[in-house]
Amino acid sequence: MTASNARWLRRVDRGRRPIYLGVLHALEAAIAEGELQAGQQLPPQRALAAELGVDLTTVTRAYAAARARGLVEGTVGRGTFVAGGAGEDEAGLVDLSMNLPPPPLGLALDRLLKDAARQVLERADPAVLMAYHPAGGSLAQRAACAAWLAPCIGQVETERVLVAPGAQAALAALLRLLAEPGETVLVEPLTYPGLRAAAAHLGVGLTPCPVDGEGMIPEDLARLCARSRPKAVYLIPTHQNPTAATMGSARRAQVAQVCAAAGVPIIEDDAYGRLPAP
Image (cartoon, rainbow, N blue to C red; front, side):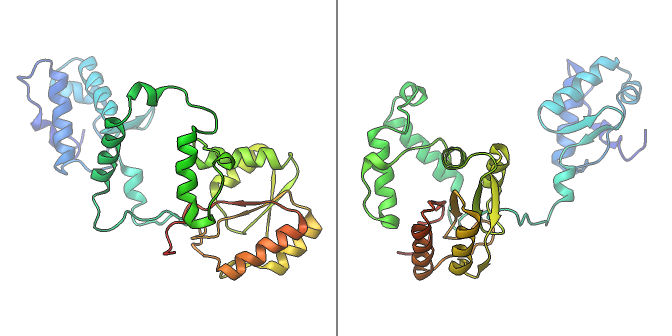
């Protein structure tokens, strides 16, 4: 046992009963105050038990409790380490596969979420919220969705709105509805990883269409529609994921005309459609 990974042992309160809690709290304090760093290896359990003069099961219990709290992690044959080493190794790296908006500046997002949850619970029975709901959403839910969509696509009949348990579920359902295994859907060369995962699961092929700064190029889209006979075209026209490109209104009209002429439906994933000013 080296001095660097055992210095924190002076924090162990030997008067505490049961003593495994003394070891656990010493670990917790050393990590919180930076004495133990993420990725740092802890003493082997037998060596620690011998150093403290306690039974091996005491140390095993302390390490297990620390693991349950997310303080440490370990694998058989390697040892036990302060948790978070992988995250520290990746500090500063940027994931370019996803378009992940940063938290809004000047807003206490956690407080807003708590307030919103409290308001929902104040005007609804939790038992009703936890119960099964009508498939596709209730009339009130579909009406709310139609009102939300109106600034982007205009008024739409409530009967045409379906509520899904998440965008990924909706995409998977649309792919299953529109394409059989082995058939293809046209996408941008860099596209949403969630769609790629759903297509791979369903055996649906994804064919990339050339793009420019606004998205799919209408002439190339028309050529691919004629040659590949796709079952659908998948688009994220506003703040495309992951490139953040946005189609102008003229380009959107051209793409829509090409798809209408070819009889190819468009799956418009418009998660960010409300962000630009109207």
